[in-house]
Amino acid sequence: MKIKNIISALEGEILTEKNNFETEIKNCYTGDLLSHVMVNCKEESAWITVQTHINIIAIATLLDIPLIIVPENAKVDKNTIVKANEEEISIVNTKLNAFEISVKLKELYS
Image 1: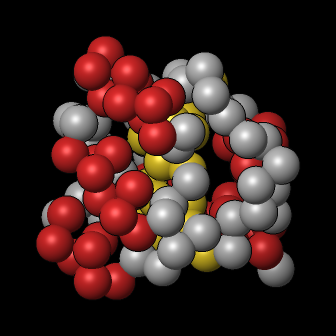
Image 2: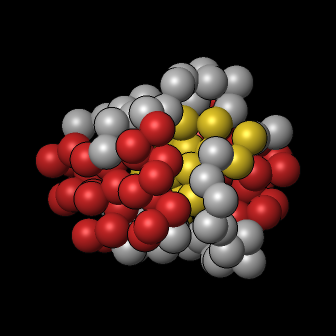
C-alpha cells in the first residue's frame, strides 16, 4: 500500500512538506512506548502513535519507518515536523482514534 492511499483512506492531513507519496508501506504498528516500538516495529511500516515529540523521528529514522500516523488530531510539535522534513519522514494527522486507524488499515490490506 502506498502512503498516498493510506492518507486518502484515513482522510488524513499531511503535516510534513517532504513526502514520497509513492513509498510502499508493508506493515503497520500501533504503539506509544518507544522501547516497544524499537523492538517490535518492522521497517517500511506505518507507525500509529499519540506521541508527538521529536524523539519519534529518531525512532522512525533508526527503524526506517517512512510514515507516522497521529490519531485524534493530536497537535504535533513544530520541532518534530521540522526534523521529520529533514529526515523525509511523513507525518499524517487524522481525526480517527488508533483503533479506528488500525481497523481501516487492516481492511486496506485484506
